[in-house]
View 1 (cartoon, rainbow, N blue to C red):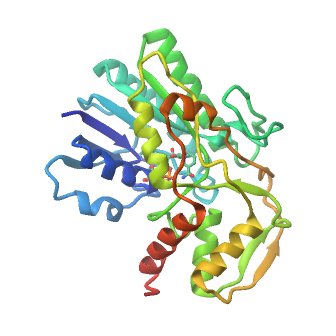
View 2: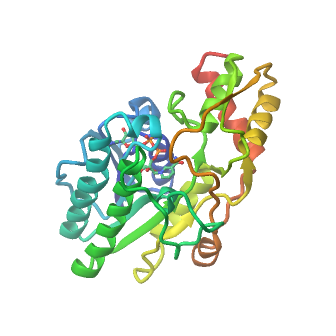
Length: 313
Ligand SMILES: NC(=O)c1ccc[n+]([C@@H]2O[C@H](COP(=O)([O-])OP(=O)(O)OC[C@H]3O[C@@H](n4cnc5c(N)ncnc54)[C@H](O)[C@@H]3O)[C@@H](O)[C@H]2O)c1
């Protein structure tokens, strides 16, 4: 039985990953400081003797014996990561150093949940892994973007310098049940506003595009990446290449929730990328993976979750 550590395991993606790992027969240690994650996300796993939940901040060293590490700890939405930007950078950078140190000590394989934000506001479209990105180093998103970039650097230097067995995935917008209702991300924002019958806020003219990957597809890709040979560290883009404008997304959410919400236009936040779409050629070839869940099906699941959370059913 593989002993697997998931940092940030009580968060949105981490809790789904814990579910999948437990179902696959792993012994799972879920570590979280509950900044954006919640015990509720993993409460159903707690009675399982092969699941353990530990409160811990990854900016401090962790001494445990494990075979695999998924490093997801880091607030992911701008509202949360901008609350305490210094702590955000520390979580990415010190967290990476601590988890890589642990991986080195116990000879564990370690996977980093990196992000499409390493590409910044990209000049090429769609983004391939070989693209180095265009990131503002001093903007309000930099604590997250540059923290994640530095974490990638650390992962590759621990591999070159210490032979640590690393994997890096660059995650593009992912959505699904257990997203935080107030995290300001576009999918949760639109759904919550639609369910409540509030105005739906469109930033800018709504023509900026995003791609949306359903959480089950993402978790499948992460697990496949962890299972690849040691000579394949990545980075690999994981996301859904289907591209939608914010207006199209808002209209689909209104239709699926049968909401009477109206669209209202607000000014675009600074450094907001205009377009973001993954090239997943490498994931297709190296992981034999591609997303399966359509936006409409994924939204239906997510809307069902938010209705339950908001007490709307
Ligand atoms: N959801 C996405 O679309 C997306 C996209 C790109 C990258 N990612 C990455 O995936 C990971 C998980 O994202 P998510 O969407 O589940 O976000 P989330 O905020 O739900 O999960 C992050 C988890 O990390 C925990 N955490 C934060 N700081 C910590 C610290 N110092 N020590 C221990 N735990 C800490 C939080 O409490 C939370 O449970 C993050 O690293 C994020 O950068 C997510």
